Image 1 (cartoon, rainbow, N blue to C red):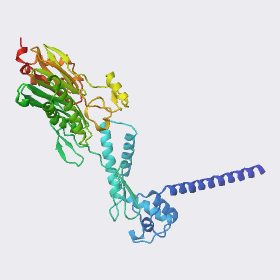
Image 2: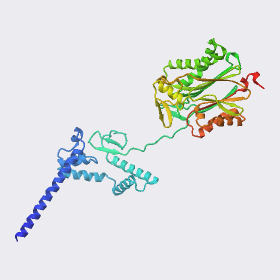
Image 3: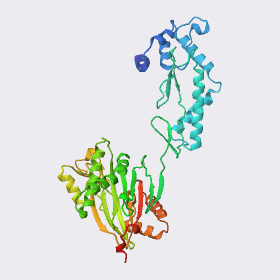
Image 4: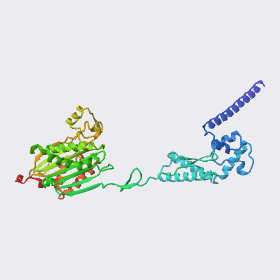
Length: 465
């Protein structure tokens, strides 16, 4: 009998402990939710009924979900907390759609879609549409007497907070629509549309032909310049192809002033005829560089020029534009690219206090510029010089034409292949365009400019056999 009583007491104590433990658990969970809930404001506190218990207030503030029912809404006096809470839940049920189970099933279906279940394109579109419909229904259900102020529009959905009642509403943001790209237009920073510059152009002039194509950059940075009938002599001419970097400023300046500066130096030079033109060319490059730097513009340009005078050919270059001569169908490069793969150029920069760095297989000055000589480039002027390398030769009857081009051609098309294309085509202009397309089709993304100069009209008469 004693053992039975002790067993009954033991069960009683265990039941009491479990009951207390459950009560403590409820109290702790209420405290945790209260800490996580948004702090009460004067507006939402004032909107709660005065006779609503703290438990009812806690559930209403923590779980929100709808319009708060008070005596002002239904013309009745409020009751104690549990009854008021029951009334809230009851009215919420009344406001919900009669097909609430279907809505809940759609929500579950959409959740499965987000977790990767049935992830086909059609299912995703239908699931998103259904979820939007459900959210629209809940938004309409959670009506307020005052319009909600629009919340944040960022990622994760916009929150809408009402100006009264302290009720928070979350509405799914509408799908982002990306405008279709228009190839003929681009938009500047202010949003106004402007037409792209002509991505391709061609020129057919006297004794020269040219074709050019813009690369991936926003601005075409290649350019060219031509001077004919210098000093009234039809056998004197100047041609230059320019490859700019950091914008078009240096390109435009070189195209406008380099030839004129060379001609001015030729007029003023009093030295003997053998060195006169060479010094004028060198001085023209240096003066053009100095005057451009005085503009205070951060830009630079490579250039390869040809000066024809009295049956002689004078070629000069800074950077990696190149001049190739066709002599009886055989290609002969008349210029050397000023790149850091040349040991003499690399040593010159290092001896002047600069450093060269190889990035993605390309050597660069100060880790920036891939050429060692250019006009402009103020920020690298301690190492990037503008003094050209000059080569002169006498034109003979076997000198057929010159190809002067930017590195956009030479990086993809070998010298001899380029000469073969010009010889094969009957139209020189068509040959220029073919060379441009050939480089582009081989993956070149840089600007491409190709100029072909017919030399036959500049060969001295005495040199013909």
